[in-house]
Amino acid sequence: MAVSRPHYPRRPHWTCRVCGLPWPCGEARLALVREYAGATASLRVYLASCLHEATRDLVTLNRYDAPGPEALWNRFLAWAAPRTPDPEKSPGRLSFRPPTVRVGGERPASGRRITEDDTMTMYLLSVVQPTGPGLPEPEVLDKIMADVHAVKNEMRDAGVWVFSGGLHPPSTATVVRVRDGEALFTDGPYIEGKEHLGGFTIIEADDLDTALHWGGRLAAATTLPIEVRPFEGIDDGTSDGVGEG
Image (cartoon, rainbow, N blue to C red; front, side, top):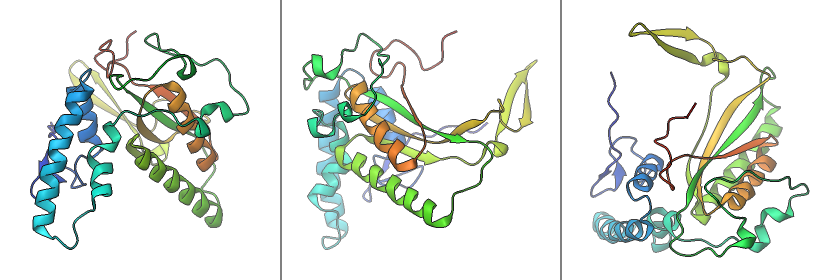
């Protein structure tokens, strides 16, 4: 059985020991949010100390090609910094606003004051892709990918991006079941449908309204529906991450 390894930094290069990406990678950020749940100020203090040490290490390695202060800030602290929604980019600009489902007693952003001690929530932005049709024409696909990349960069700049990735078609899936203590494998998706999960992005946002704003940005970029759902048990301690029946 494969054992999950913690995504710790490798010094002095400050890359992840598991995936090799600049640390903190997406998995490291998820782990840190869980570890410091309810203690965002302590998380920022820890990240600030990491930023100080990384700056010293990277400049020592190559003082002429080390990341600049802004790049290091975005990498270590921007994603964990308190944020206030930008009224110019508010979800209120959407043409249709149905009632939204909020969890944990959350109030709309317009009816509450966001403070530095607010705990942010992880949201899953799922790309709902039709099953069957092939890829768009190259010129159309190139524009879609460029637009998605631009939105991803905006998320990074805003400090909300945690992780994102695309998925292979449902035909490549394998379903795993356990029967009488033995793992059984079935080729293909668990459920056949007209749509499937084509990819996803995980963000960390102050509230549902902010998450819906980014869901709208992704929907415009991908030209596909985006499902926005909050994670359980990351900010309110109500769940261990396993769906309740």
